[in-house]
Image 1 (cartoon, rainbow, N blue to C red):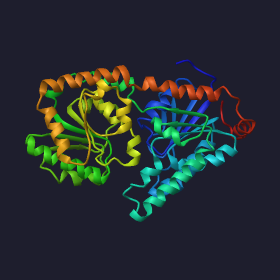
Image 2: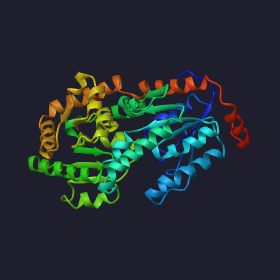
Image 3: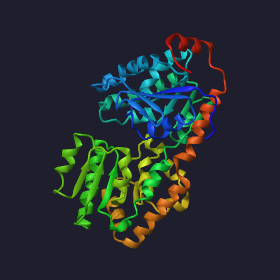
Image 4: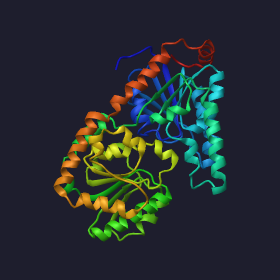
Length: 394
């Protein structure tokens, strides 16, 4: 990638410092073309890694503190050594946009998901309050986002809600590092240790649905072995107590660098969204591409935007399930497991197509291009004056 005018950026996020989208993709990419990249978060380890300066503020002790207090802790840390660009990940941080804009900083907002519709279906919000919460969240997001200079979205349909002149869609696809590590997983799919794997977090209702899929599978394949990576602490005993010892192996959290090795021990990766809620219609789960990169066959719920993104010949190699019948998922997995030769060929073909068509390195050019365009316009006088006053470095 060609360098551009050497401005600097601070990424403010509520995600962990090693988050696969925020750090592994975006921060590392920008560090290769910008003079300075800071990442400020309440979760993770401080230090310098791959050219990114990671700074950590006190972690919140509750969801309310995460929304109401942590954004201002992040702001205070940012103002200790401000940069021209402030890249806001997570909608709660948009509360900082009015002040940052008034001080002359250039704000970029990253839209990970359909925030308003997501809140309409969150279990931790009392049912009578979910619709008002979604309406309020949507109004808040659109109002504050207008004060951002540019918007980046994780899928194309999310762009429609933002009128900004400068905006880009940047899909969260696997990096070449992960794909190369996945290609080293050469054990044929049919000879791997675990029959089924689920990677990533699950809401409690989806965890229960996944457990019912496993129960159906046990009736078809009594020697089934399952690996689950990424459960919340309270979910671990709930799932473990539901099955005989040895049937389900649980890894509560795995570093992203360990993911290829773990998936390389698995035959079929599953992605379960049995209820196509409005925000999921816009979703493209990166875990599906990570399964593919590591040579796993894939069973996934019907997800329109994911299916639109895939080339028809690639989508034809994936089992897509409509509806909320656990037995349908179990039959799809059992069907794959019952044809070892086809399973091996599917795994190899999915590895090839990810390397050829679905890489972060193809997506990153749009992110870099956006910041290049923004950098080619002069910094505001107010922003330059504030940075000099506060000691920000060029």
